Amino acid sequence: MSRLGRVWNATAPLLERKSKFIGWSTPLTEISQLEPVLQEFTDCHQKVLSKATHPKMYAWRLTDDAGKLLNQGSHDDGESGAGNRLLGLLELYKCRNVLVVVSRWYGGIPLGPSRFRCISSAAQESLKIGGFITTKTKLNRK
Image (cartoon, rainbow, N blue to C red):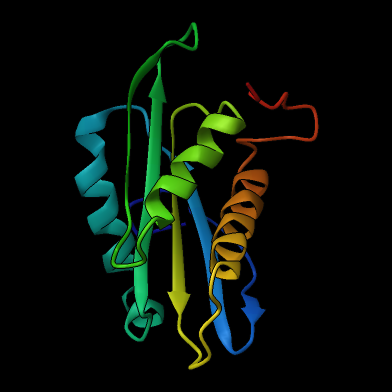
C-alpha cells in the first residue's frame, strides 16, 4: 500500500537473461486520476525504480458500470510497442477501471521480441493478483 492508501498489486521479479520485469496494477475510476496516480507510483517506488531502464510502461482502461468503454490509452516509456501490448492485454481480458504498469531493468543482453512476452507476463500476473482477471475471465478474441 502506498503512503496515500492506494494498493499496488506487484509481482515478484520476472528474470529473463539478466533483465528484470515487475508488474504493478491498481484501480483507476476516472481519467482525472491518471496523472496523480502515476506521480504517486513514481514517488512511492522511487528507490526501486531509480535504476530501471524503463520504469513506467503502462496502459489504462476505463468503463462505465455496463462495461461501455469510456477511455483507454498507453505509454511505452521508450520500449517501442510496449504500451500497445499492455493495452491489448487489458482489451483481451476485458479489464475494467484499471491501470497496469510494468518496469524493466535491462540486463545487458538484448531480448528481441521475447521482451514483449516478459512484459505481458508481468502485467498479466499483476492483474491476476489484483483480481482484475480471473481464470473465469472470458477472452475477448475476435
